[in-house]
Length: 289
Image (tube, rainbow, N blue to C red):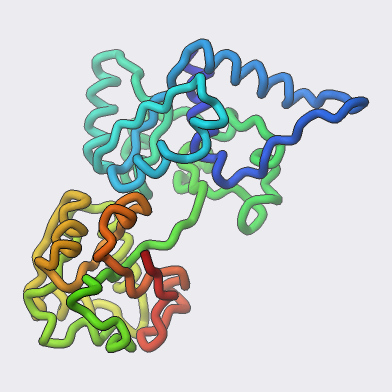
């Protein structure tokens, strides 16, 4: 039963990037994968639920994909927390002999602890759809994994991180021509920053700044030593503060659903351009609510 749940949980994460499933045309011979697919769907419908452990900032977005509409008999149960918290939870469940999570979307670093503890199952063995199994259809012609064995921690999608947000009633975005403009003394004490110690998107954000040759450690050093930013460690606290006008700028990430709820928030720059190519004078594309 657990194998069936793993298969369907994997499909939740892949359905947004996989092509639509082909339907059989009269006269066509059924491919083996079609029988396997239908058998898996029926088994999952009988079980009725798939359990997903996810990061707080993306769990809601995953739950609101088209999966539930396409498979109404399979309930998605999403447990949200930070990656490190999920690791502690899974390890405690394992020690108690419980296997409650079917699949995890825990970021880039937290799953590695589970890999080292040998509590993960190879994910590629659960792939069924031919457009998912065919590695030529993936970026760079292969499936990307973080673990050295290339079997357990799949990097299934690349998404822009929203780096800088502003309150549209307090900030004129046209005044920003460079990331360095964010360090203007007039913004001192008016910036809210997702705590780097919290990991997750904060670590990804700071790696972007750190490895950008035109920004690097000097930019981060000045941000945290000169600008007196306020730190927060739970979404959407910083976004709420930004929307309420308590702060003018936010260095954070935000989910689509959060943006819809907080119409006063706008986003100046994202990291749609790679960190190797992004320029301090020409940041990534502007993003708006």
